[in-house]
Image (tube, rainbow, N blue to C red; front, side, top):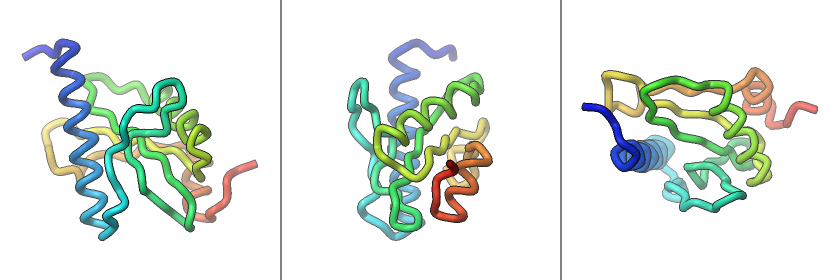
Length: 121
């Protein structure tokens, strides 16, 4: 079945909810939730994620094609909008609905920020 705009939007919304629910349960943190859209100043798809006491922005993707460069750029812009430590991308893995087996993408700078708790300068 090919996706149309409505089915792609529904798949994206479901993926965002599934990721938020999974993270909230796995991290035992009821502050983690799917965010509502913020228009031009979007702050990511998942709210309430924290690392080293700082915000972490997660952008969720459920797409037929991978576009890491634009996804990472989007996560970085949204991290800036949210004054977050880093922005990451969580993408659905083809063939599984188990969110724990999906992929996480980030730059090495974001990885270092997550490990050290400090943004790269």
